[in-house]
Length: 209
Ligand code: VGL
Ligand code: ZN
Image (cartoon, rainbow, N blue to C red; front, side):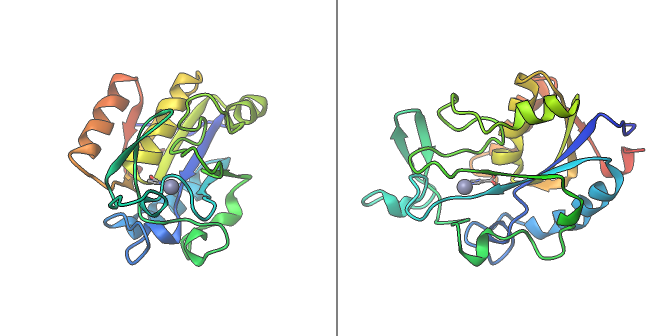
């Protein structure tokens, strides 16, 4: 059970056209999170949306590396990078929020992944684990103490954002029926295990009062 507090902020992660079925990097059942995210947007007093926001030719795209396949990996200065199909490119239709998402309830949209040579699954810290997006400072300045997460994808942007929220000193809770994962090589189960080990809560929509 989770009782909503005035110091809670809902973080709606990457509910964008390219992550929906038919999109450039479709998450299985990605469209199933829109209704639950809207229910959460109606329930929580404050909300922030994130938007994956890559420049054309971004280093996380397989097309930016000679002979690379989608979902392969490459060594980057900051570690191993999964190579994705081109997705969420600034100025394309796929970067938009999912149709029907109640974006009007959001007080802030935080964009990430705009640095050409560095990816950013996390809404807090880029993949170099050094460059900050400013979100932790914003949440702290607003007096929020707990971050409740929903959206896409469980095993990448949701998990990394939840882990970094926790590392930044916030409580973090993921709403399990308001997220969906990409799930490559058991990555969804691994993400839940990492989140559990970090003290991140896991609730269902029906458990929120
Ligand atoms: C995401 C892979 C690449 C996500 C974003 O939103 O989880 N995954 N870019
Ligand atoms: Zn991305």
